[in-house]
Amino acid sequence: MANIVAVTACPTGIAHTFMAAEALRRAAQAAGHTLRIETQGSVGTQDALSPAEIAAADAVILAADVNIDEERFAGKTVVRTSTREVIADAAAQIARAATGVRTAPVPAAPGGPLHVVGITACPTGIAHTFMAAEGLEGGAKKLGYTVKIETQGSVGAGNALTPDDIARADLVVIAADTNVDLSRFTGKRVYVTGTKPAIRDGAAVVTTALAQATVHGGPAGVGAASSPDFVAQAAAAKASKNAGVPAFYKHLMTGVSHMLPFVVAGGLLIAIAFAIGSFQFGDQGIFIYEDRYAGTLGNTLFKIGANGAFGLFVPVLAGYIAFSIADRPGLAPGMIGGFLAGLTGSGFLGGIIAGFLAGYIVLWLTRSIRLPRTLEGLKPTLLLPLLGTLAVGLLMMFVIGKPVAAALTGLTTWLQGLGNTSAGLLGALLGAMMAFDMGGPINKAAYTFSTGLLGAKVYGPIAATMAAGMTPPLALFLATLVFKNRFTKDEIEAGKAAGVLGVSFITEGAIPFAARDPLRVIPALMAGSAAAGAISMAAGCLLRAPHGGIFVLFIPNAVTNLPMYVVAILAGTVVSTVMLGILKKPLDADGLPVVKGAPRAANAAD
Image (cartoon, rainbow, N blue to C red; front, top):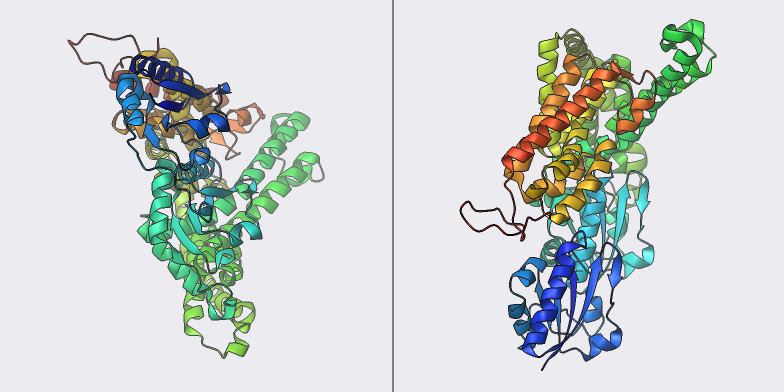
């Protein structure tokens, strides 16, 4: 007779958690073994295993569909399985544990477990950042390591790594879609990848990192003078290519991630300014930028948003693109190039070009200029900013500025002159792009294009992209209510969270559903988002606040043609919901598609 302990857990912690626990109890009782089970559910941990019970156990069964803390089971025989496998054949899992079949037992190193630290970051710093952190933490703990992950999100660094954390780290994992500062990790083994691999399988990322990580910047204790910035950048670029993420995209998204707070703050202030102006002066009050309203609160807020925040977003975009490429020496040339893009009228397109020019020019200068060791400190503080700014400034003023300004003017004129049909087609394209990869490169391309046009006072595309970005998670929320038999109980619970994310314009709320069934879910979501974008653009809807979701709709004059904008969001949601109902197949009690002609089990959502 074996003494077995077990833990069961599923994403929602409801149906599969307790069904697996009950199946294990019955199988253990039938086989004559003793069993203690801990369930980790949405109401917290129940029947928690004590240290004494774990110590006395002959084996541990971990029936979990989510990452759980395994550190307390170090040195024990561990059988890892899923709740579905346990529900299907609990006796087999009990037999594996009783006969001592070991599956990758948690290591218990004599000197203590390996210590892993890391950073996660995505362009907006919201969903992917924290999902990747959760994946890495769970993966490292699953392998028996201690872990601490810093999130570089939209509200700054969370769970920040201290010098002591870094000093005792055996491995550094960077899971980011933007470039991050690696200077803290000189002398440490560093592995760089994107957020998606960490979200998909954190344990696999940590395992790969152990095999492929390289020492960053030379041995510990080597000074900055002997470890030029370009070496770090080359290593980062190589790592990003190995991870399947183009360096160009990472550089652009680094700029976009730093630009977004300026765009969002400026857009919301302009929207509030219009609301105040309209309240004070009626319909004419929306023109609060005119001289006759100078000195009013609405006019002041407009200047803060339009002249302050919007005046800075192109220089910040360009500066941080250059920073991503060439580190700190590229920041000043990039920002100055972005400012000159504003002076020449080349706008966000000129800013993007200026950022890449500044970055690669400074990177080339860093590699080309050779100075004696005693004068090396002059490069980042004097030579690189001076020469980089000179080169970029001359190119922007005499070569790039006017042609790009003409192109931007032509694009603006074309967009403003679009008829209903043409506008609808553009809106459909932007909408489909927003739903294609939900936070990935194509989604970000559509959003970056739309926000960049705000500086040119073109507000239609951003309205279409926000409507289309809200539609996917809202549709999944509605579909889990209307077509319950198409979703597992776990997905139905997750649908509630998707609804909250949808009204907040966080498209990433749809990712878990798309990951499980991409061939059916993604086309359905693209159809609805395309419909939402098309209706928004064709109806002439304009949006002056580039983020905020449904909450922006309550600000007077933030949205032009508000009724049709609401119709666009609702229509897109309904289209995707109906498509999900058509494309997804009914599921049985085990969450598997029902086969026609076969006996049907209880519905998965019953």
